[in-house]
Image (spheres, one colour):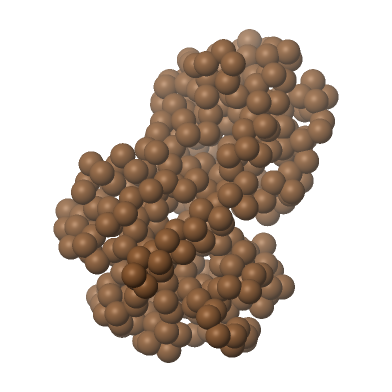
Length: 383
């Protein structure tokens, strides 16, 4: 159990102490928790602390730089087994930091986090569900036991909220707060017709993602005359990446697919890329698609819950991208072909996507949603 050297508490009376507990693996949940903590740290009302469960590797360099520049207080707990040992470390931190509000982000951290917060009688406990998770039976039981003591469950999309309702694991209050991105980082002024005809999929290699369908769709595109590159940006499980590399070789796509590994300069890459694709089996709310829209890219994605909160392709006045059935390489090929070759329609949808990113998925909107929730829960406590 350790912290950084930046424990600069705000001493003013009335400052609200907030803990954000999340995995230290650098996932989307980590990023959202960090963004919230940084935003609260910049203002006068909150004293946030970020607590990370160790995954045996450091945070991505970009995240660590943000923490260092902001002097955000960060602590780590070990990834111990049996799990009560991690809970005990976290409980000790809660006793030291004495927060008023405890956010438990992501599966399965939200289980261990809420157990620790409950043990120390933290006044407000909030569970944040970031994905469409497959709960193991004993974790489902644990989540249901914690629900009555959870003051609110924040779901990052409508699909996630429906999943929580179906599983009966939501807190006393259940609501949707969409994730947001720092839109100022993304420049989308280059017309699609002037961009390279490349397809970029920024996602980790994991069972949840579906890079193989995109590879097979790319093979069909090449046969139709497509001249661009398929780019995979992301780390993840080595065995899933190796499978994709073997598939590329087996179907004769060597030289047309690039495995870039972990990419830290995505905001700089997106404005040069015509199409951003996300082939996936399930999503909470895909930040990469919001970023792609903000950068003016054409987006193509699997029609799964979470994605459909962002991408719309069935309303003539609201289409902002293309969707295809999960795992359907033929539909994926056709959607990608349209995004690559139909300049007028692709630009129209990209413009709508850029508008929607600014209207519905800004960082300010996300932070405001969480802070308003804190205020409403505090008001209930005081009455």
